[in-house]
Length: 227
Image (cartoon, rainbow, N blue to C red; front, top):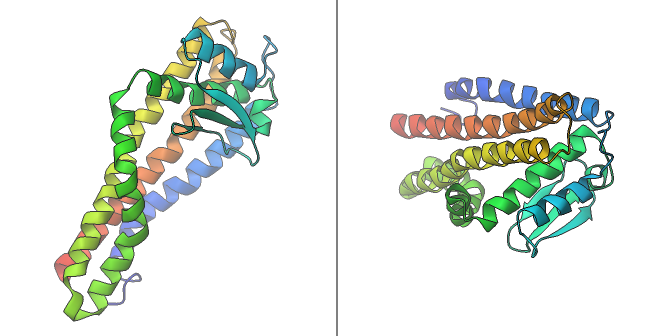
């Protein structure tokens, strides 16, 4: 057996294919709807700041960062970080992304349970994704350290759990975003679908990541069982 090129690698093919498609989908959707500007004429920054105020959140800042699709909410710093393309743009894509990240800030402010669970799992997930495979490999190739395979699996399982918990967090943030954009009058009825398509494509990347993590864990378990 020569891992990682053993037969179990076939298990990863569906997840790899989904990951490739998800990356294509988000880039395609973003490219398309970033060229269509909203009738309200507000930028991503303005929308995010307005939504924060409307939800009585006054301790979160909105700031511009570099990169493409680098948008995120930093719960520790209490900052919504938007890429320049989102921060300064009035496009449907920009408003959807800005509202999505604001959705995370709202989750944080309202102590949304899945977000709290994900935050508590982050240290374990970080260790598991970094060291899980290495410990597994050492245990597999060095017989006297065979027990490290089990430790590696346990650590990686923490990273898998993090990916699974991420799904409801991201789906909920997108759901909040669309409701806020629609109910707040930031998007007309005929503009909603464009922003939604961008967020749906983004959500697919998280589904792909979770699928890859789960299948990787199954693969490790199979290799361990055959060892």
